Amino acid sequence: MPARLRFFNTLTRRQEEFLPLREGHVGLYTCGPTVYNYVHIGNLRTFVCEDVLRRTLKAFGYQVTQVQNLTDIDDKTIRGAAAEGVSLRDFTDRYAEAFFSDIKNLSLPIKIFVWAIPFSHPFLTTQNLLLENYKPIFGGIVYMLAFFIFLIILAARIFSTDRVLTMKLRFRRKKIVL
Image (cartoon, rainbow, N blue to C red; front, side, top):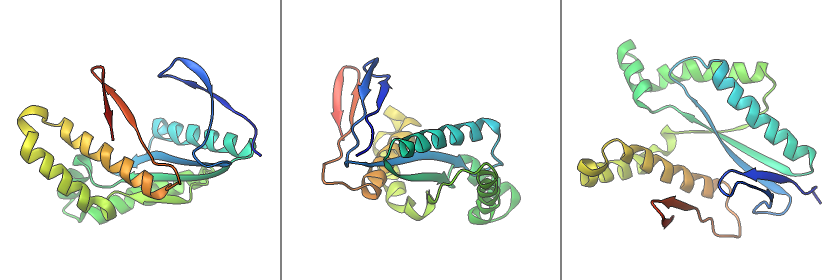
């Protein structure tokens, strides 16, 4: 039985007991880099902090599965590939390999990575549908909203549990349930 942990919840502004969705198991879905350039110390600090959390959970007796996304389709990656006259895959592979080397040198044992491109087709279809219907109202926010919804669905599939995954967002005092 893992030890009991308490975390500070920035939403409620209180310390709360940590209760994983599955007893004894924690699934971490963490953000990785957008592979349009080499990572810098600020990027690496984020990955080290994620690793400290993972190691702390393991030290307290939890089994931890960490999945990290790599964003390989983005305005910056598309522009970079076009400027160099290479395919998006060739452009992003160079920076992804450098990232893998960097995290290996830092002893960050992330084993499961999710690339945006293999999962992009439904996301892009959703994005285009939203842009066609709501561009005058939302503009660029639609991209982020569609991507956020896509990540929630992807995380739910990766960390499927017996419980229903529900996220509640607060927006102008209204609850939106996804």
